[in-house]
Amino acid sequence: MHTFEPGAVALGCMSLPLHDEALCRRILLHAVELGIRLFDTADLYDMGRNESLLGKILREHRHRILIATKVGNQWRADGSGWDWNPRKEYILRAIDDSLRRLGTDHIDLYQLHGGTLQDPIDETIDAFETLVSTGKILEYGISSIRPNVVREYVSRSRIRTLMCQYGVADRRPEEEILPTIAAKGIRLLARGVLAKGMLCGKAPKAYLGHSEDAMRQAATVIETCSSDTRTPVQTAIRFVLQRYGKATAVVGVSTLEQLEEMAATAKTPILTAAEMEAIASALPAETYTEHR
Image (cartoon, rainbow, N blue to C red; front, side, top):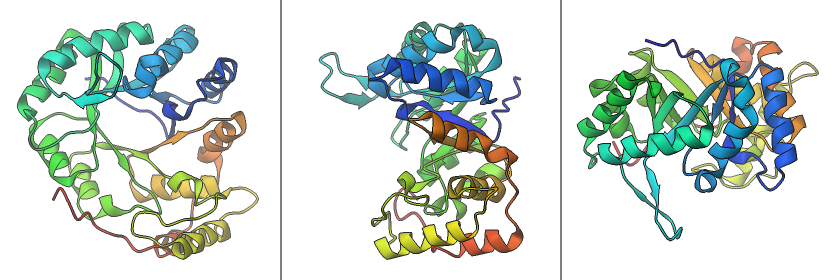
């Protein structure tokens, strides 16, 4: 079985400025230079253009990187939107389209882009196992925030990763999801780490169950725990990396400056126990109210 080791931070490609291909090229190539290993995209993003751009720009560097993409949201023929489709027949067709757009013969990590308890879960798992056996994918995982769905895939499949929103402002996964995947050594791909930038400079507003004032106070705590050698962005990322031992922070960027700051996180000082406690206490850890 392939060893999936993406590194501490990964590039979330959904935020790439596709309107400026030259800038996208500079960002992606610089990410490779900076040692970013995992590039996360999805067939849903920009109706496949995101995958195509990633494949076009990074084709010559394919041997140096890991590519993760997602499946399950099927675009309608008229382009008016998409429908959920976790059926095996569709997944086995969709992979070929992703491989073509990405210009590669295999995908390192193929993720189910959602999931419900009403899905034909065993059929979906069989589709991923078939793709592993044929070499079209090396590993598979799911992208879900639903505890009941996560439990099913952890108990019934060989998923290697779970992507879900997790960070200072959203610690709901700590109640059940993180213990569930930790028991199986499943890697966490954490998205939403910066809470849309509100933890590191953007104007605060109500977020999930937190008030605008609470978000402002949390940002202040993170700033207090930062220094000349670790920015608030890096502090928020480090919190996630230290809170769950097998975590990778998937961070989207749209500028070279954002990329460099994110990529430098691994070189920054670790958070002390006192800093971790202060940040964890900045906002209450809420729980999921649905999909239990």
